[in-house]
Length: 159
Image (tube, rainbow, N blue to C red; front, top):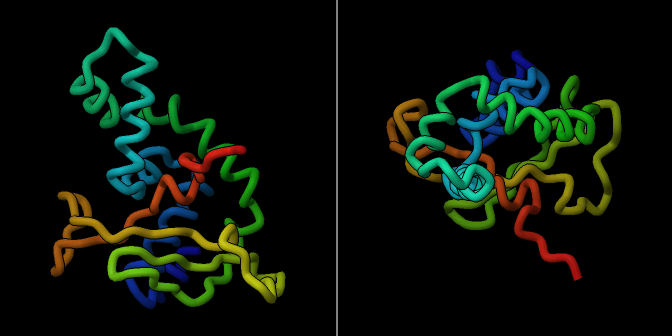
């Protein structure tokens, strides 16, 4: 995947490559940093609820600790690795679909398989454009992040 990153066509595709690399390597720090702020806020809320004796500032500081992120995100990363394992070694990237100036998605399929004829939304990794933080500053002060709630369908209701 590293040569895909060197031959990046644009920042959106680079974000998806970094996301897949973080899952493949089990790198909880890189995984956390590639999630959008809304998704990070969702997880912070869950952890605040679960650790009712801690204040939110303490939990936010814990996200700077690799051991904490390994513990809370490790199972999620492992489940992702198991469910998308075939994408991690040899991904093929489709076209970027821009849904708005701030939302996009990229189809990712295993390179040894033909892309689906009628692509389903599940074949796409959703992205959102947001203001850069200190780690992701570029000339435009924006960066692409994984749209966490769409990617993991956390907010999907079951009837």
